Length: 154
Image 1 (tube, rainbow, N blue to C red):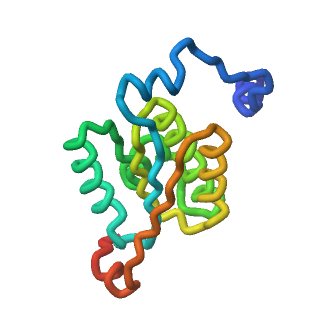
Image 2 (image 1 turned 180 degrees about the vertical axis):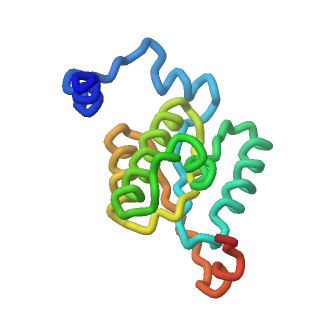
């Protein structure tokens, strides 16, 4: 109905964060480490996902809870409604930034690997973490264009 469509298009105006009794500090003490986001960025084919997979294994061996958020994996689910326009790319990174922040708040070391070519988008994700008092580390995976092109099947 027109009413239902109209309601679906409205943005929530009376939404507030609901704090629970278990804090970030409680989760950190339980896990023995703080959550954080490591944001791997670089060309497609530069090795972002490969590095994140290797680091995930190392962290696991060290007893550090981590989770890998990879561009392709996220586009198969959460962001399958997005294309590759400038607006969709920005929304892709915004959503991943929010998910990364939630995981980091839960005490997880998040390994996010996304092309994320626009500094402004990465800066927004960094600010989101900093405003919440969470660590955010940007890792630029530097790779010559010719090498990345040779690796990139897309």
